[in-house]
Structure formats: structure tokens, C-alpha cells
Length: 208
Image 1 (tube, rainbow, N blue to C red):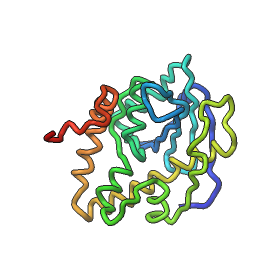
Image 2: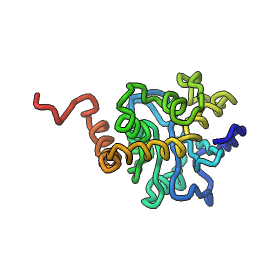
Image 3: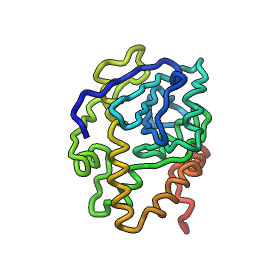
Image 4: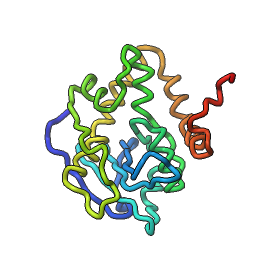
């Protein structure tokens, strides 16, 4: 890892054509709240893990065709932390089924069974030795202009996901749980359908 200042590029309405993230892209979203039917998608952050972050502000009157194509591309793995929420919001507001997906939070819960701390900040601190700030977590992402602090916060959420995936993959392999993790990742599209369909808080696998 490097301590160099990240490069942050802001785009309005869509990702510009011609940008390549290789075979995997780190993704995060910022929204007006946590309810997919009530709240809206405001910002999508993307990084190839190279210290560059692309911020895409979502506009209701723009189709975001390039962004949708990236999310739907089966040759590009989309890396999230807590993919359940992001995949659900992307499906609800962009109409795209994100596949394939890697979720570092799920990987952490399967690999780091010695702790209950699976937030991005906790994972980055322990596994990468990197301290990240969550001060802008509660912020107005629908504001007409994003502050410099908001931009840095948004970028930070994706810049380290590739390195985190590599560390967690090694731990999953060590514990013999990579196949289990992959099955969980593959289920996330169905989990999003359940959340949007009204089963967000109901355990349909429960006996009761």
C-alpha cells in the first residue's frame, strides 16, 4: 500500500466512456438514507485499486448507460463492503443486476470468526494497517455540491477494497471457506430481490 494522496475524479450523470477497471472494480454507494424504496441513490464510487477513484453523481434525468454496462459486465467482478445494501440500491434505482460480486464484509464474517468487528474501518485497520475516517458517514449526499471532505470520504470507501479482498481471500483459503463465500456472494442478487419484495427483516429459512 502507498500513502500517496488519492486521485479523485468527479463525473456528472454517468461514467465517461472508455474508462477500464480491468477484471475487478471496487464499488460503494452513497444514498439519502437506508430505505431502498424511500431513499435515492446519489453517488457511486469506483476504483481499480490503483489510487484513483471515480465518483459518479446520479441524476434522475440521466440514463447512466456506461455505469449500467459496467455493473452488468460478467467479466468484471464488483467488490463491495456490505454488498447486500449496495446491490439492492443499484437494482432499485438503476435497474441492474450486479454480477459477479465479492463482498469483503461477508468474507470477513466467514474468515475472521475471532471478532465481531467487521466494519470497513475495523478490517482496514487490522488487515492492512490503515486508519480510515468515517466522519462524513452521516452526510447530505444529495447536496448541490459535494464538499472536499465528502469527496475524500467517498473515495476512501473503495480505495482499499482490492487489497482487503486479497487478504481475506487468503484467510478464507486457509480455513477452507472460499467455496462457501462464493455461494454467499452468488446469493446476493436473490437477497436483493427479497429485500425489495418485502422480506428484508424476515428469516424465510426459519422454522417459525
